[in-house]
Length: 377
Ligand code: SAH
Ligand code: SF4
Image (cartoon, rainbow, N blue to C red; front, side, top):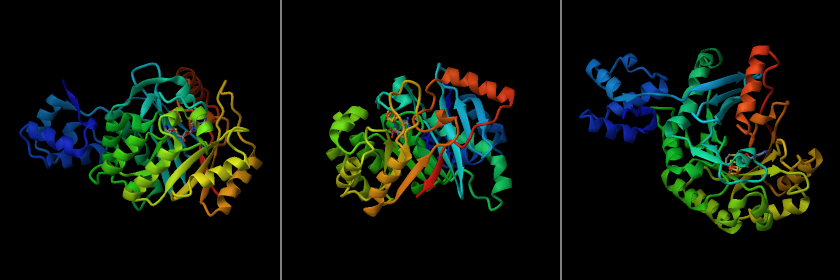
């Protein structure tokens, strides 16, 4: 069977070349061509001898995922719907901000963890993405944006400066493929991102957090969303398996190895559910032994969710309690009506969305509004 070389990190590629009777250093060359230059035709790889290029063309392939739709907003935010060969696609979102560009990457089609406020969770689990489908999102976005590189970054800075594993799916539930993709993101021959610029968001799979710390300690974000077990059991059901005490201990262990000296706690603001001052105070107590900052995410509604977004005043009051205790707090703000590309809403109803998106492109309606704007408070 033909292997897709986008599925390999450099070490695996070196092993592959050894198997072909070739020198392992070829792996580095290939990584550069595929990821750094975004080349997928062997014949364009001019510093590789022709016979080897021909051999590779026979034995292997470089197949990035297929983009079904690309949408571009007036403010530069872009969204790609990636074909997964089954009904539901996955989405990748590029968010340009002052001085940086963040790519939000998906790890699974659907998610098995059933957080009650998440439309991906509502959709259920379909399958894990392969390595090439995960790293392929960066490949696709990088290629699409690279023409802009010349215009916007004459110094040669990267358009995609940060990656967040915050799209569809629970990345630690697709551990091996996600770690391999992360390794490619960090590889100097590929994307060369520093570990601080790659963030993995998890709902709290404790054993996998420990393994990640050993294998690839990127920046860690933890979806907390509730300050006590009773409430978290209800809205983030994985809490029944890994309750808060264990989760906090895992965060502490992570920081012993992590290059970054804090965990980002994400907290979705659900009206009347987890957003009172009592909750804020409980939260302070809960995290007191973990160096951390907070990211408050106003709930992004979707049909029949059963939840409402916290009132602005309540979010402000909640934030103030955390800030007065000395924490750094960011509030993620979603603007515009196209909120179904925001956190927790990716690919909820792909087929419908596909139709709508096509309609938009063909009818030249106003493109997407700003999907995520981080407001540092
Ligand atoms: N599965 C991982 C990463 C993907 S979700 C995780 O849960 O951490 C990225 C973030 O969006 C998580 O913090 C998630 O809890 C949050 N989220 C999910 N649904 C949301 C919604 N409807 N509104 C706002 N945030 C949501
Ligand atoms: Fe899965 Fe994360 Fe959604 Fe929970 S919030 S259902 S873990 S994608």
